[in-house]
Image (cartoon, rainbow, N blue to C red):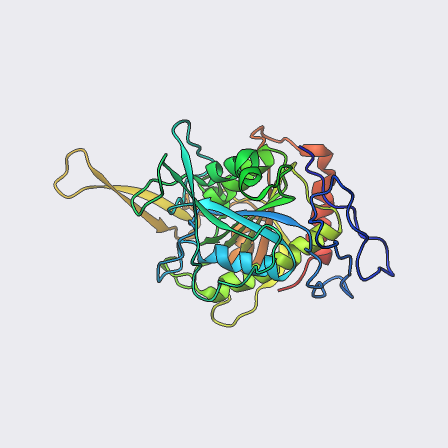
Length: 368
C-alpha cells in the first residue's frame, strides 16, 4: 500500500486552495485540499488545513464514553470533534470495552464483530456532519455475533490491524487506507516505563508496523488519584493535536518509520500548558503495580496499582535527563518518538525524519 502523504503546499503566496489531488491520492474527490497557511510559526491554522486528510481514530479506553469519570473513551470523541472541525475525514474503529494496559497485545483466533454506534454521546452528535465517509463510530468486539454488554473486546492493536487490513475497505471504501492513524485521547498520561503497557501507544505501534503514520495522544488526570479526567484536559489536548497534525502535514512530517507520542498536562484548574518539548521516554515507573495477598491467603493475590513517590534512590524515580514524565510534570506538552524496532540503539532512516520533527516541535509547533 502506498502510504505517502499529500503533496506539500506551494510556497507563499498560496492560493485559497490547491488543485484537486491526483487520482491515486486518498483525498476525497468531493473537495480539494486546502493549502492556506498560518500567518506565523505558532499561528492558528485555517480550518481547512486538514481537509481531505483521512484519519483512522482508535484508543484503548473504548468508544463507550459512559462513565462519570470520563475514563472510558470521552477523549476519543473530543479528538474526533477537533479533527473534523479542521476538515479531516475521521473513521473510528476502537475497542468495544476498556482495554487499558493491553500494550501491543493481539488476538490470535476467533472472530471480530463491528458494532456501529448510532446514538453518539450527548454534545457530540453533529461533529462530523458532511464527512465523505459519514464518519462512523465502530466498537470492535471478539465475537461471531452481535456485541453485547458482556462481550469481550478486541484489543487496541486488534482494532488498528483489522481496520488497516480489512475493516476500512469493507466499511467506508478506503481501499488504500488512511493517511494517518490517531490514537487516544487516553485517560491519563503514558510516560516513562508505563509506555510499554499502554494500549494507546500499542495501537500506534500497530499502525507503523504496517507503514502508516501514527500519533498517540494522552491527557493527564485532574486529581492526585488519577481517577477523574476533566473534559477541559481532553479538549485542550484535542485542539492542540489538530493544530499539531496540520503543521506536520504542511511540512510533510508524517512518517511510518516511527510513531509520535504526545502527553498533555493538567489544565483543568485554568493553568495553561507550557510549550511542547522534545523528550526521551523515561525509565521511571510513575505508576506502580503491586500485588498483595488476598483476604484469607491461599493462592489469590489482589492487584494494587498506585502512583509512585518520586524519592531519590527509589526504584520509581526518573533518571533519564530529558524524560517525558519530567517535562509533563513541569507543565509542558511532552512529545517523544516511538519506534517498533526493539534493537537497542537503533536509529531509523539515519535520524533524518527525527531531526526534522524535533526541529518542528522545538521551533514551529503550535503553542497551547
